[in-house]
Image 1 (tube, helix red, strand yellow):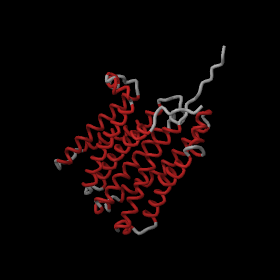
Image 2 (cartoon, rainbow, N blue to C red):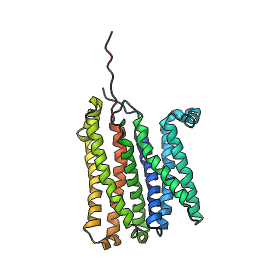
Image 3 (spheres, helix red, strand yellow):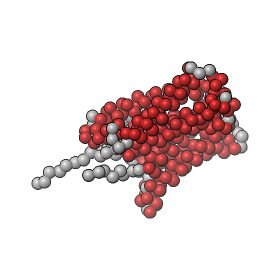
Image 4 (cartoon, rainbow, N blue to C red):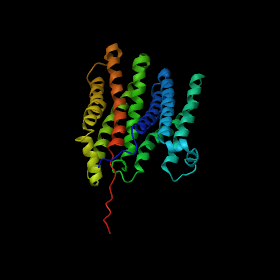
Length: 297
């Protein structure tokens, strides 16, 4: 008997977009701190964060059809503080409010208060971690019920958020992008950490019963193996890491200031975005539940 996934593409997209938005806001905060002259990139990051998180929430509500058919269930999400989903709604709502306030100040060309940058950054980090905790409450799914999933999704969120901001900078604001060296170097270590977390998650899950074993095997040697190895590992993780290593330590820095160099940077960050989406899609789709066998009396 083949297991029918309880969550599919819409939830994977929601998890990806929510993390992407949070990571973009954190990247904008780092740019404001270390490269304050990158105003266009910061403004774009704030707008991207607001839009993608909003789209993600629409996807979540559309997939959670019971909420649309019974609006009172949305009310319960605001009062049941024993639920991870309630805390997720709080984190997302706070982030949307803070980010909207920042976008308004950007439009008015007003300075963004430090407390607002910090509050928005904290809520963005909480949103990134929440996307992993949301899956973790499903205790019967070994691939989801892991303490490694929230930090993994947070690291991936920071990586994809930085990637979308760098992608914009390389294509639309090249002069500002040239001034983001410190933030680019900080971003370099995220795929390394992500690789360690993914390997650890798979290793631990592999030995967590038949369901965990079968979930990992579906990823590394089963029906998801091509998407996992070629799409996520090669194109989305190792490939971008290799290119960034060359750009930072081998190729002359002036190469990034050429049209060819900016094209390479843009393509690399697009691959990071693909890898971030595939990570969530594969985690959602490959998870198998623990099965209970009850003997006949």
